[in-house]
Amino acid sequence: MTLLEVENLTVSFNTGDGVVRAVRGVSFAVDPGQTLGVVGESGSGKTVLTQTLLGLTPGATITGKAVFEGTDLLQLSQNQMREVRGARIAVIFQDPLTSLHPLYRVGWQIAEMIRAHEKSVTKKQAADQAVELLGRVGIPHPAQRVNDYPHQFSGGMRQRAMIAMALALSPQMIIADEPTTALDATVQAQILDLLLHLQRESGTALILITHDLGVVADIADNVMVMYAGRAAEKGTKHDIFYQQHHPYTKGLLESIPNSSGAAERLRPIPGMPPSLINLPSGCKFHPRCAYVMDRCVTQEPELQQIRDFSHLSACWLPIGAVGVGSDAERLRAEAVREGRMGAAVTVAETIAASPEVLS
Image (cartoon, rainbow, N blue to C red; front, side, top):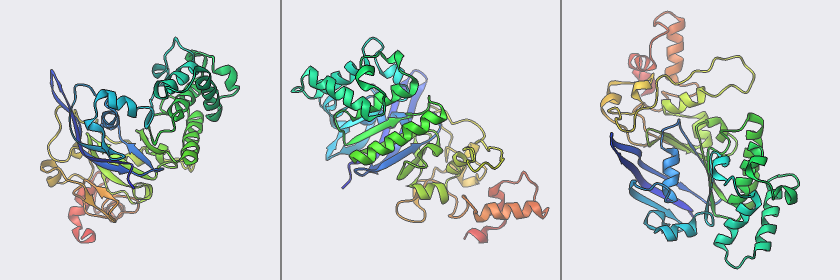
């Protein structure tokens, strides 16, 4: 049974400079207990996508469907949405210091959220639950720390407090929006381990938003890679990490430091993400793509099935052109070694020179 099914969601904003097309026809589904990683650079539409599901994009023009437990979230009034936020879908924001009120104690804020949704709970019961929740997420001496203010917590502890707040009402789904970006690598690993442990313990579905594919390597079941407001590639974690098809996905993976200890230079994606007001023609990634062909400049590809029904990619390249050990990459390396092509030759030129390999 599908918990959340989003169909052809589009979100745009009218500004003085033009229309910002933040999300363009995105579809995906999340099952109970499943983790979906939503990955992409800043400006790819990840946060707008998920905030729209919770009615947090005022002034936006929205079309499509977002059916959660049989109810279209996009059709709910603000009062109806308040019953969903926190109780059925919880959010962990990127910066807990701006999400927690600086003038109220951490425990009071957790208890206040509980009582806002459960009117029968007394102040004493809510306060006791706050202590229990802080202990559950690994805050030491929770009975004492529950009375501290946010500035008295470290960055990692504040994020744990936000996770405690998200878990307070046992929601069916948690949206974690870049929950580890502001943390150092050690604390980041601890927070991700905590999220994974709590999710398995409670069976809660999780949407994890991040710009780093490395973050979803251990925690995600499925991955959706976004670029310029659209899904560039979708698939299982294995599809994305070991059989990726879209050049943008490959570029993100090559931007991750090698954990094996091998001394290799990172290969950043050249150029910058496009303006969402003035998008390029054709495939929106083509100005930055080493595989670009004539068709890419004029026609924007739709998602197409790659190796199985769950692996989809919005790219004109044939299967096998991109990825670990791909035929095109192997041909290019052989041609450079043998002196038949210069090192600056693009992979697209290699494909054009040997089209039979990818047929």
